[in-house]
Image (cartoon, rainbow, N blue to C red; front, side, top):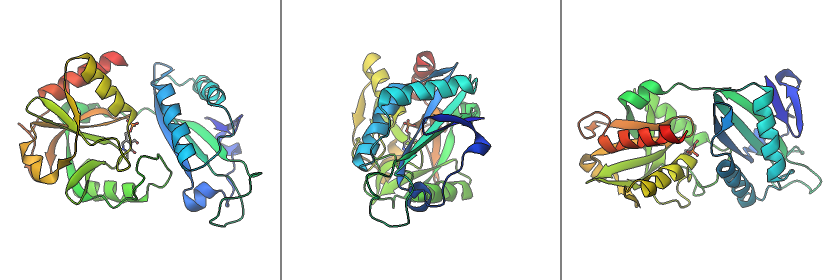
Length: 276
Ligand SMILES: Cc1ncc(COP(=O)(O)O)c(C=O)c1O
């Protein structure tokens, strides 16, 4: 496997991350996961725009221009002959003696990127999944795609421990999103999802769903849903770069709709397949 380390391509075993890398010690960094379909990086510009935004919010100076990062990521796909899969890219604030305060300006951020094999979520996409309600106890800047995923990890495991595929996070009864997915529900033919504010990550797939709705005469409303309303959902689904669109057929003990993927969900899945 070829790994991008700053602006150099190396073999995986040649890359050494310092014990004082701030990503390792503080989770002080940001990341993106991009899907590669047929050697093309899907929505690359959108992912890079979010990467730049996350860096700016955390005051991490990107050491390369967006154009250079883009060129290097495309080169990474080539060097790995990656037909289908994903690219993981992260940047940390750099390496310096352990201290909470930002390091000196002379310390450069550390960029790494490498390919991930294709996940195969086709069974979930066809049959749907169960979600477990979990209280959202993350920090209040979930809009930043930071390396701090501890609560996301805890929530996901809580779901798995209850034989559910994904956690459905709620803050005082208001549904926010999944542990690594955005959440949507259909009621009376309209699609609802949490507004893109500091309480969720504004998913790139979520934005593609919005475009698909606009282009195909479907209504998507950005409005909070509550856990009290779960019984009134006709359909539900989650989205992410690697899962695309996965129907939700049960949340805790509540069966959603007929307990199988709904019509609007299936239509969006078809439209999404056509996009990629
Ligand atoms: C918390 C969270 N929400 C939503 C998403 C979905 O975002 P995207 O569609 O950009 O993959 C992710 C992706 O990893 C995530 O971690």
